[in-house]
Image (tube, rainbow, N blue to C red; front, side, top):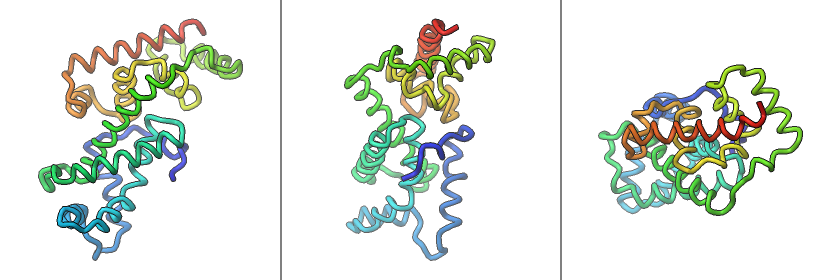
Length: 221
């Protein structure tokens, strides 16, 4: 399992997934190994072992993507399992060469799985801002003072140290939109396409997410 520390680098873009992670996987593979599309065809023909190869080939990437949204190992593992399960039962809908790549298709499934988990997490528990320890509150106050300007507040809130507590105060739609924009690096239009939302809906979710974070964080200013 990939450690969460490995998952906080530069934002990536969904249309670059195949170029970056996919290319690295292909480069590392032997030239005689079947392509993803060939493995998908084999699974659809009844060869379940071919899906095990797809799982081993891409589970690390799916794990890294899940860590963009969650900070607990148990949640990430659940997302990985559910994502591959959903992919297995949806393989007949994969359009091969008409898609950007199998990995991009799988990544979209993973993002939607993360969205479902965000909604379940919100129903299970609501983390109060008062749950911040004194040390965390002091760290947050210091960072906010250094940020100086209000537009930087949401970036401060997404810092690895405090995001698990602060971001859970957002509604699932708002949190997902903000994470896709700030951590995954998608544009508003790309988020709308990925989630099947309108562009105005995405903009509304982003506005609400930022307003909520500012309201929560203002008490530390």
